[in-house]
Every structure is written in C-alpha cells, then in structure tokens.
Image (tube, rainbow, N blue to C red; front, side):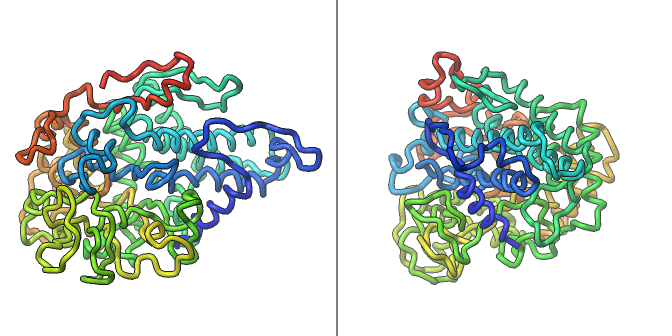
Length: 505
C-alpha cells in the first residue's frame, strides 16, 4: 500500500509549507484563519502530522541536488563507485567518496531537508501544546509518538552526516539562530525522543496495509537500536536487545523465503519489512519543475546503466551513477542467493549501452530501473519510479540481536541461531560462529545498497583499515576519524552570523 505518500504531498501543498528556500514572509490575512487558529482542530492537526512525513521522500532529488541518503552513505564505503560521466559529474559525491569534500563541495540538501522535517515535527508538538479542542488523550499520544520518532529519524541524518549541528526542539523565532550542539548532545535529544515515544505505547507494532508507511513501535525499536549501537551506548544495549527480541518473537514479522522477492514490487511491505519509505508511480506528478510533488523516486534512474535499450533484460536505462565494484560481486559465494538479487551483471548480457566512468559491468539490482517500474506516471518518467526504499528489515533485527548478545556476553547459542537464520536463508549451509567479524560480514552481504555499510565500518572501528586507496586510482585517500563528519556546508556557515564552528574535516 502506497497511497499515504500521495496524501502527504497533497497535504504539504494545501498547508502552504515551504522548503529549500532561505526566507519567507509572515503576513496576516484579513479573511483566512491564522496558523494558530487553523491547527486547533483534530482534522487540521492530522494534516500537520501528514506533512511531517513529507520530507522523507525528498533526499533523492530535492533542493536542487541528488542526494538519496542511503546512496550517499554507500558511496563513502567500499561497495560502489560514484560513476557518472567523469569525476566532475556530481563532483561533491566524488569528493565525499575520496574523503576530500570541502564546505563548498559537499551535500547541502540533506541538511535543509532534515531541518525541514524537524521543523514540521515541532509544528505538531506546538499545535498540541496550544490545545486541540476535539482531540482525545489517545489522539494526542498518537500524534506525539509519531512526530517524536520522525524527529529522531530526521535528526539521525544530521547526526551521522554532520555531527555537530545547530538543533532546536521548539521552532525558532527571529533571528532564527539555534545553538550549535555536539554530536553527543544531539544523540541525547534523539534517544530522549525515542524513549518518550515508546513509553506512550500509542503506536501500532505493525501498521495495517492501509497505513503502511506510518511509523510503528517496531520501526521505533529499530531506530533506537541503530543509534544506540552507532553511539556505542553500552548502558542501553540490554534495552536495545530486548526490543530486537520483541520483533524477532512477534508473529507480525519473519524472513522471506526468497531473498530476491524482497525488492520486487510484490515484496513491498512483505512480512520481512519493518519500515519503508513509500514512492508511487501510478498518477505520479513529480516533475522537473516540481521535485517535491507526490510521486515516484529518481533513484532507479540514477543507478541504472546509461543508454540501456528500453526494456532490455527487463530493465530501463538511467544515468550510470553508483556502479557496483566488481570486488563486490566477487565477495559473494556463487551459491549465495543474494548475489543475483543484489548485483546486476550487465556485462554478461552482451547488450550494448553507454559505458560511463568507473563502470566495470555491474549495477545494483535491488533498485535498478525495471521495465515497467514507472507505469502510470503523469509527468517525468525518469523521476517517478515505483520503488519503495527498504529502511528496516527483519533480517537486521536478527543481526542486531546477535551482535548485541556478543557485545553483552549473552547466550552465544542464541546469537548463533539468529546469525545463521540470515546466512542460511541465502542458501548457504555452513554454520557461522557468532563473532563480531562474522556478524559484520553477514551485514555487509545482506544490506549492500541499503545504506548500512559505511556506518557499520565506522562504529566497529573498521573504517580506517577498510576504506583505503584502491588499485585503480579512484580513491586516493584513507578514511580517518576526522572524516567521520562531513564539512558543514559553507552556505549554512554564511547564514549563521558567526555562530557555527566548522567540522575538522
């Protein structure tokens, strides 16, 4: 079910919410209610909650920049090249992949989009604080839980990419300057939001088909475990493990039998899916002049081979970004079912196309442009593919649990069971021992192209040894701890009136 994001886009337009701009004027209408008056009823606060979901869709192409948050993570790891026409095509990506970004050459849209999401979540909380005449306590708890989880999710983008950022949990007033806080302080805000939301017990554990895309308790648990493990907050490992076991033991979730089915359209919101970001092609109106309109995603176009004959091998073409490294393909055992589901071996097809920079003949099958993937769209076909982004899956709950058990000295037999449920589902018969190295390597193979690898390498202290110069001369720098956070965009430094300190990148 994907109708929710169509609704979200329409609500954002109806509410007149702005994004990607520097300034807007506040005026008082002689005939229309003020915002405070408008958002004083349950119906209209529901609209504001819907609008708080909208920025989830924007990172693939919004604010004049391509920056899908999963893909931007992956190009800084060791499974993909950047591709494109040459090293100047999406130059900021190439610099980030080589750990040589600058304040003038770095992604900027994720910063704006994340803060747009934070601001919209704050809007809802402030609406509630002012009073909603026809709302029950159950309504208030449900709204609060949703937007606090969402606010933590948006803050997670800022936390991982930029670290030390200005942050606000109440919307700013003139001169609209927030205090810059440390990454550790931002973590405290996120974990507080999640703990508050979970304690309200107001979310469904799994959303109904009609509400697929709304945050759930299981999604909040996954986000909690993600940030606790990235922070290495050992005091909260036991709680994170308890949450993973609740998901593992729930009848609502399980592994899919066939790994490849997860990433088909029929696999959206399958029993393995804990949370996805919805995109829809049917009646999609996203267009070049309206990138934030409701519709599909440009991700498949970005990552598919250039000038590929339409429909050949069941795929459409794209722009040739993010080709897979051949070493990624070779990392899989030939018996591993994940290899074909992950790696599209275009070289073996014999089909001619325009081979672009850093192209070794492999692309990501999970989100490749399928021949009918933008069926029914009403605007720009290349922007409106019908691919939900898989954010959290049941297999990650299993691997999180295995890792947390190892980290806390728990039952290694239980950890081994969890690890091998994922390993054996791939068609591999060996029984792996639950060591940290085995768990991280299993995560590597399981989640290629899902934006996990780079952060796993950092949080396990493997980045400095794994992210090193390559034999082709594409990556010439080695990752180091001062590269953990990207430079803050110079445009934000300039607007901060001297209140932002640049990261030591």
